[in-house]
Amino acid sequence: MIIIPARLGSTRFPEKVLADIGGYPMVVATAKAVEAIDRVVVATDSEKVAAICLEYDIKAVLTSSRHTSGTDRINEAASRLGLDENEIIINVQADEPFIEPEIVDDLKRLVEKQSRDENVMICSAYKSVTAEEAADPNLVKVVTDESDYALYFSRSPVPFDREGGFDGYKGHIGIYGFRHRMLERFCSLPSSVLEQTEKLEQLRALSHGFKISMCRVETQSFGIDTPEDLQKALQRIKRQV
Image (cartoon, rainbow, N blue to C red; front, side):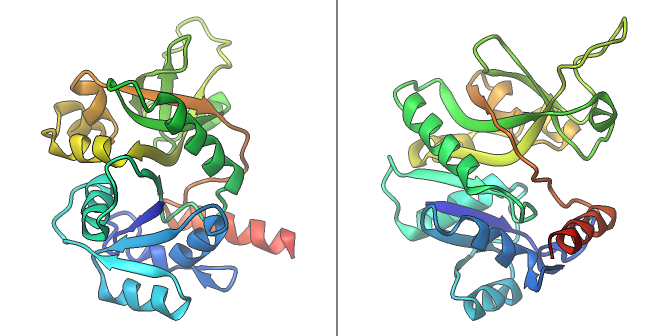
């Protein structure tokens, strides 16, 4: 199942999940981008978002407004839906309307591959980015080991390029895969100092000693975090028409 967390009160870009993307509210555009892969549910704290999803025949589950992360929100939705503990849940961010369906497939296969390792809490993905792109704090970077397990995520350009010439920056894609039981386990963990400092929920898992398995993907997708990102998205749509 694909669950899309959609909080209406974004601090950096209020009501961004309802911004128009090619004639659809952003959360609807994201749902439509992946609906051919699996069942899609939107987990939201807003009756307004839920009603709009219903207009487009997209199932929505109302969740608490007190959640501090999207993963906590989808955990409540998964519980309300009564999903089996082994159900694969893919968390696609509502601000990723250009996400390619094949990336969801790749992540689903990675979750299946890692399902027997109880130390792997989350599966996710990254793309190669330039040094200039890595300097943007809105683009989260990830450093991985030789087996593509995440070592750290940061808004800073990591690793630090002391001598210059490094060209291996990895940009994190806003998509996560869990077994339901691991999602519940993640949400039972206390928030960590690193998570609160970087404002990156995935650091909760690493801080408590769990692994995050990553896969490299080719993508033209990007998250819409700011009004400037929205203008970039609208320009992209205009070029495609």
